[in-house]
Image (cartoon, rainbow, N blue to C red; front, side, top):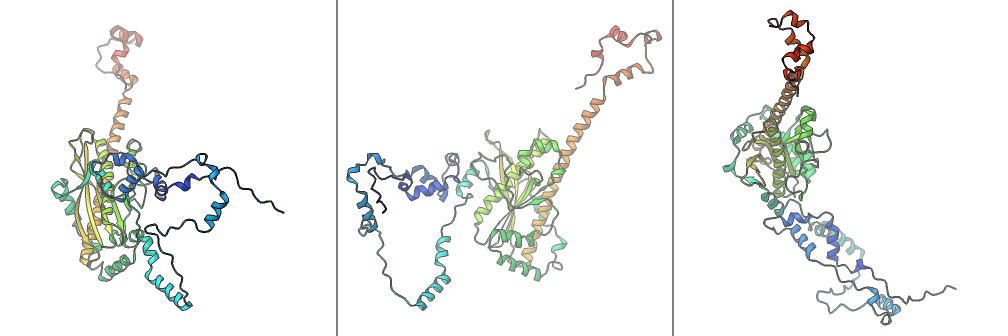
Length: 461
């Protein structure tokens, strides 16, 4: 015969987790992925976003007060009665505001149940309810305000770079591969169909965008996390992860330069990844937000232009190439078919804390799904911009490599001026005033008669 378990005389053990509010538990769930507090503390102006409200709740919502079990009068608790009360449904909540009335189950026939299930599947209420709660993006108005505080923003044509006309004219140059005879109406319709069926961002970039970009041999990477670059601001924002970027092969740039400027020109710790990125593309699917696309392009362009600026200042330390664009950043939205191309350049700032500003300027935009002519114009501009960015990379890399080779040659020539060679030239000069008797004297003695050897021989650095 089994013995009944006697009720414990000690008070019921209370789980502190169960006393936390549901809201506080959700906040703890997001805490690992939340933006650092310094991001919000340093904003010059707070924007009303989902992330802002979440941070407000994190700072203000407190967990429910926990009453320790040893403060409860155990004499007033009957554990057996409490369990019986709970099994019977607990206290009535009918007088609580908002408490739903109990649903009365109505018997239905199998046919009604099947039609009801088909109706739910057709309307998709469950999926609509789940999709109505969107994840808040890190690229929101608060992110934009953060970039503005660090003098990184989009500017109009009134503040365009000094080489804006050069870039604009280059984008308009014709390409035989996109002439009407080679890119036909049927090819455009194939692009339209592919773009329409590519719903997600990955599909847009992998299926539809190649129609626009064409084929190239440029070193490039997709969705590479820029984990190696020095933070552009204070380290409180997410690292960049462009959908596509072009760079240079690591073997093209001298090893010494790569090591010295690694935090600015090598985006990844993977040393085989293309370096010195200065051409970027950010894409969005049909439901993607264009404002997020633009912020990503702004962020990418500033990072790329900073690397180009660092390399140019390495070549000529006394000069900074302000007001000159070296970087192209672009966006494509699969839902609207909009292609937009920007240039990025640096401007000298009046602030002592942040001496450099970064700006992106729109070069042009096209509705790629509108008609074949609009597609050709946009695709020509993007491919020309890609070639122009490659030329700017190659110019800086060639100048940097030439600069360091010149330094190495100078150091080598200096090292060849050894004390022995200089002494040999002095001893073998054809018109020497030294007599034959003096030549018979040991070298060390003859040097001491005039001055010390260390004073006569050139110093080698």
